[in-house]
Length: 376
Image (cartoon, rainbow, N blue to C red):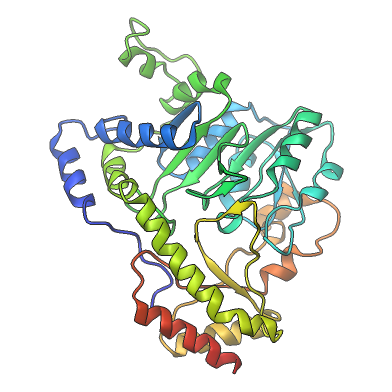
């Protein structure tokens, strides 16, 4: 069976994890956490980068930082993972979903303004498949209405919008290092990017269970104590050590995935031209990271048959999110503003093909041949 995903592995992860194990300091903010932090700050130019146990944790920290509370509203797309909404629901917010663009599956920036009310506190764009949302429009709206922008860039490491790294365009960015992402910190992991410096010190406090422990270890205070709300948002240095083995090869991993993505795209262009399927959109101002390769079929029935066809040929292909506004918790904690013209319809058409670092040429060709075989 050709799997849908294999966690990336470069070869040095074992060595670094063992070194961290033997260092005498395996908890958070050890040697490898600092290496990763420095790498992210240098690559992105953000005010501060903080590793977290997951992207979920990073989003929850963001909700703390902008003081989300009962009565607040947060605008986001319904086509996303549950953590995007949960992080703000946990603080008492009401989620307001707006429709997506059918070309990118990202939030439709033209639908946001009509959903803004006096209760709106934040916009959370989700960069689906590592392709950027229209951030210039979103940031202009945020400035006009004095809103915060939290980028859910879980899938967006190494992607760019008009030359700028995803996660650096809003006030705060959140990333995932789950094993299904392009880079992993041993199966789970995340990152919070602080772009607005006013949040930096408080982010460190929230991450350290509400204490000023980080300031203490830097010698900035004589003792540390409980100064704010917070939780345990530090990953172990073992996770950072594993991630460091990936970051050293970040460009290699990126190029390898892009090569596979481009092979798929070229192989299926004639099927799109024949009207048999739809390929992912290519936007000149968005440099994606080949996080995933998806096809859009005619509808749910054809997609089901297509997935079964590949499975019978030992290829694992999968669909993606069930729109959150249709879920039991979504009905309870959110509402969908205006018309669901594309969210549900497009979600039922989309299917993701196997794509991972180090995917063998014979497996890529097998996927291409079996996909073509379904239509031809």
